[in-house]
Length: 78
Image (cartoon, rainbow, N blue to C red; front, side, top):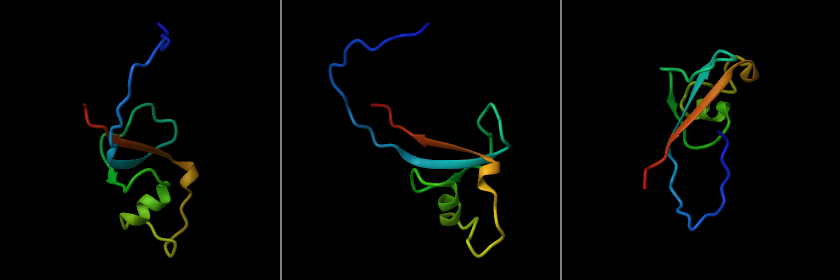
């Protein structure tokens, strides 16, 4: 059943924390159960892997576009 927002009486900003990303086979229909690495925030997969010490421009080439990349973060409940 589709819904529609009719009104908003207020809003609250919540900090999104604890970013993580995980590499998966293309077309996976569920988030991977393991292999998640910490990330500094929303960024490219290459920059997150570089910051985690798992990839370098000096290392072998990597075809980032041939894999799926899943992102997740924690959002505190009010």
